[in-house]
Image 1: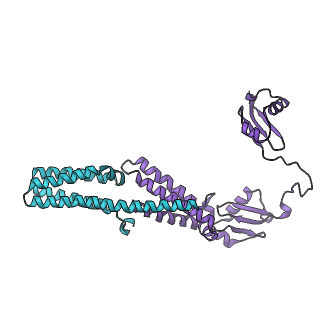
Image 2: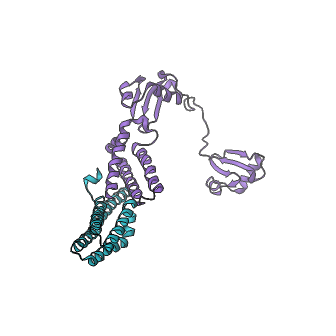
Image 3: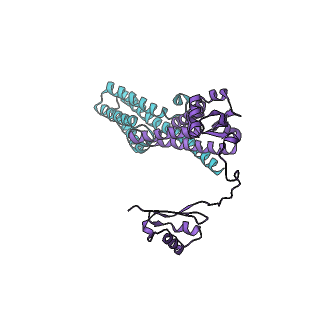
Length: 224
Length: 126
């Protein structure tokens, strides 16, 4: 038990450090410590599950150790900026004022092809459109285009638009979600009236009904 | 902050449990090993009945703590010790000095190794 306990701590720290050194590109959407946890925990759980010659405790002790370590790391990451930087790293500015930072790219093992692929995925085919590209700690690329490359907003066009608010599901597959209807400040007669207006007579024939805060209604009837 | 203390508490609890387990395993196997050594001394003096009685007592102690050993140690190791106990008991009953001495020494070594595996030592961790 002691050996398993200490080995788990050593291996967790070692693999977390290893994943951090791999750079953000390899991390994907998880933070390094979360990736390590998901990598190890599945394997730890499967060994005592398959091998009946190993006591259950040999799987349980390392799993509890890992979960406790992760909990400690997540609290420390929230509380301390310095610790967060050590554990998760800092975002890297890959393009600053339209200029590629080749040193940052090398540091993050980000190739030109990968950068262009990420930019294309965000809708930018031309590097000259991009003012800033930031590689976040979870491996995602955030792109800030030049102001003249941004699509105009309603405010830019000085057009007034109605605020629709958050649409809520009121009917899902013929079932009425009363709490959502009540939260929107409506009742059953109001709903029946809306259905009537949309040409739907029965609730059971509704596949999806969404209502937003401005009483905008979206109705999809069940296919017959 | 409460999550931090819960997690830290769990880690401390696991550390204490693992250290206690190492100590307890050492204590149990040490006592059994001592009984087996005493049995060997008795056998060397020709007192086979006393040797058999001491060996059987060690075997009964092992059986009494079977649940503990089976839930904390590798089953292959505990099963091997059980087989060795049965062999030693048979040799002591048949009063076969050479085979008894060899099997008893093997059993004592197995018990020592079983406890050693649980000791908080750098050699085990590495």
